[in-house]
Image 1 (cartoon, helix red, strand yellow):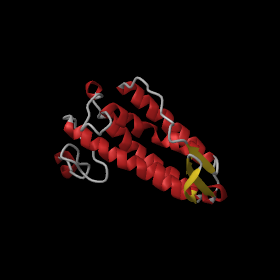
Image 2 (cartoon, one colour):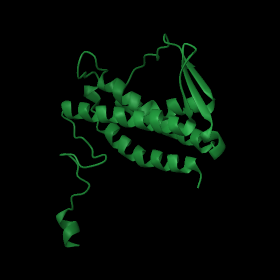
Image 3 (cartoon, rainbow, N blue to C red):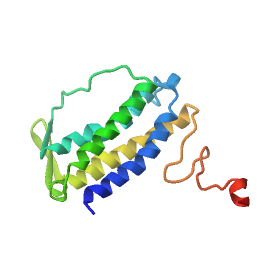
Length: 175
């Protein structure tokens, strides 16, 4: 089995959970901010939606240089645009990851900020830390926003008061 197949399997598994979180975002709460230092619910949900497709492009090369003045373009965010962005992002991540063989995925990748090397790591480590762990971090924040806005919080790695996939229904017990 190729290493990328393991990464793709994780992407597929986590996509199901991420989809539930994004679907739980209320269209009328996109401007909600948890604090003055926080991004809006809409920006956070859009960020979660676009992480896989955005970051996977970075590993197409062996080096990525970001300039500190770079800004993401402002865009109108709607619930529909968030869900569409996730679908597009996921498809792109699948496509790019699928092109990597074990040699390419083990090759080194370097991140630079304004030309200064910030870190270098194998591309496998980049996918794990910057694509997956970064996604999970922000998805956790999204869960907090969902709770604060009164939405139901989906289960991820365990039950929530709103969703308990481990709980058996009476019909399942009696089956």
